[in-house]
Image 1: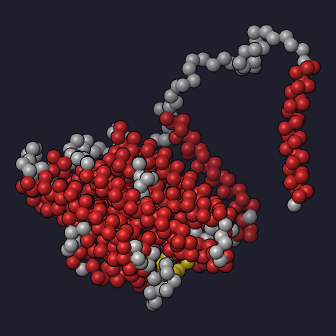
Image 2: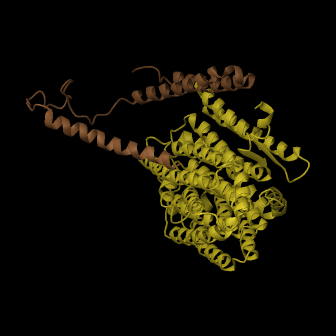
Length: 118
Length: 487
């Protein structure tokens, strides 16, 4: 029990010390030659254009929601497929009920025009 | 694990309601007639009620409890009686909604689907025997209600109502979940039966975490059933939400909260009775008093009914505090009575209202007695019943609860309850005074649509019926709570 906590303690100490030592070392070793490009916000990337407080089209969210639903479906399908031989008929029926409910959701989203970009 | 161990027949009413919700959702896509969806929902509600009745009658002895899904939930008398309360509420709300939605131009098919999903959540809450199921059911219920509260998208007040309800509801869920986590930490289980066993084994030393957990659980539930001082959201949410939704959630969500709270406190934590009972007694006194005193000052009828519903939560809580069979039977009876009279009162508010609901003030009810004699008579019945005037349902609900409190030795609490009823009579009777003794300001006659008229008629029938023949329903309630006390 004690040794477990000793390990965690050592990890905590190392985790705190490591970045401090690394950053401090780099600070003393590195050459300092700043220029305009180097001190810009994104050295390798685009400057932002306009305000970031803009409204997004609501369809982004609808798309994201539909995507999340089917993402979760995949998350459920993988372990089910792996353990398929052990689970048997019950899990098969269960999964088809689950899929039927999701398909119902897809039909709903489809008919409501959530999949069309206007 | 096989299918028969899940006991799908025992959970049939809930499954029927959820399937109906999904069918309604999909049916909306292929039909232009929105009223069809309402009747489809009613059909599902009736079938679920019949299924509940079959489960009740299917067992020989009254002391039955059919566990399902590995004791995650149970079908017993308690849950089946509560099914009746929820289904009555849902049916009356659907009937009252049909023409209201058309009038307010919010006639979207999702309304009925969400209402049914919320009903399914409530029914699951009544039958939950595991803290995880309680939480799951509460979330099904709450998320549907958040959307319903903001259903009138064009109305800013409705949006405000939904946002407030969502933020405070999510906050309350956090409390509840934290409480569940601490109880799990203290007892090593979320199953109620296992918690009972654990508490029997530990004796007087039970640890701090259990108390903190139970306290957080009570705070979470107090938010959901709007007990003072956790009631701040209630008036704004009830006033802003579409009236038919207010009717539904003021009864349904509250009954569901009491359902789960009753099972938790009386079945799982009776050994800690001495600890939670005084906390609830304080909440009850505060809730009744503040609810009634604030309702006195309201001139908006919808807001007045919101404060009145806070006060009623206080009365019902007395039955829980009594913690005896008479008290719990009283709670169930009161919830049924409350379903009829409160949904009925809101249905009248719908009938008097016009598009955009500009006329919710007391003065809009002036002279209703001569303009719409039947509607005014119905409103009078609901107001008398809410105030607790004898031959009506509300009186017997209060009578049973207060007498149970006296039996249990909470005489002071019963007296405070009675005094509060007297105070409440003022603002209920004020509506009647306006209806019958004031000259009408507007002469326009509100048109009463047949489904709404049916809803009001059924509610009047229930309110008077429960008052004239309380015994069979009380017997039913007494039988249904036997399981809680393990008698």
